[in-house]
Amino acid sequence: MEQWFKQKWFQWMLILLVTILWGYSWILMKDALQYMGPFTFSALRFVTGAAAMLLIVWLLRAGRPPRSALPHLIVVGILQTSVVFILVMYALKFIDAGKSSLLLYSMPLWSGLLAAIFLRERISKLRWGGVGLGIVGLLIVMGADALSQQSKDVIIGELLIILAAVSWGASNVYYRLKLSDLPKLQVNAYQMLFGTIAIALVSWIAEGGEPVVWTPESVYYVLFTGVLASAFCFTIWFMLLGHLDMIGATMPSLLVPVFGLFFGWLLLGEVLTVSVVVGSALILSGVFWRI
Picture 1 (cartoon, one colour):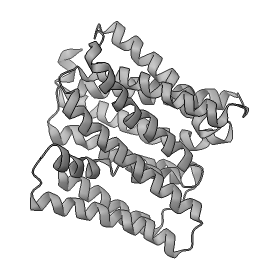
Picture 2 (tube, helix red, strand yellow):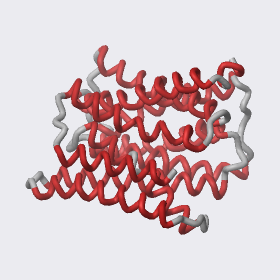
Picture 3 (tube, one colour):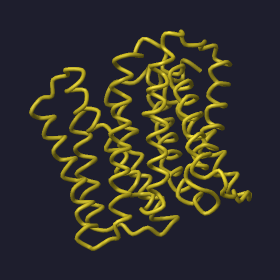
Picture 4 (cartoon, rainbow, N blue to C red):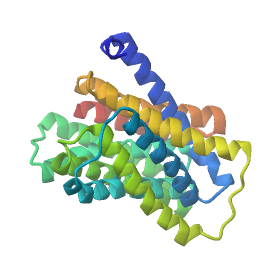
């Protein structure tokens, strides 16, 4: 298997598979709100995903993190899993799945800005141009909604998604500061575990008395997003990281919102407005420019 990961065709086949699964999962996240509350779904998804990730870590003998790393794993878990998916799932009540994926995957822009502030990474004028392009794209998407007199819930939902993207970017920077020496697969499994505990607590407080409608569809949504989109895709992704250069490693974050917008249009009938298309092009160009 290790030899296969060194083959370019196999790498790109896996990249395509992972990004399609991640893009498609946005449709399921949106549709799952018909059957349960947003926080309950996130809790069920990540309980399933964390259990699968820990099983994978055990099977691959990745080991346990040192005790000294546990506080940092808790911080990353809250930033990367708890905050991101609590905000995303709540925002999906008000905005389209495709647009949500686009706004969330502005994350590399915020990662770059936060790395410049906290890691003292130098940003060239060219990369500042990429950050500027991405921010202009975000303003076009949100500004068009404001000018078209969308409800306040839509605007608030978009702001929540952007806040989630900033939190994801912050988790990347914190990981670089405190956990970069640990195996990536180990970090992801344990941060997901701690993040899941926080999501479950929020779900119990906010939606503890709300019913969950169990159907074949709702079970499928939980299992797909938990086992495939979370555990399986992240495992494949971390295995690919050892064989890809920076551009190859960043490509999935560019392709996911593309598939998210496509599946939203194809399966949910979401409208691709001019502002979304133009904003998408600018955001993705800005992210790619940062590479």
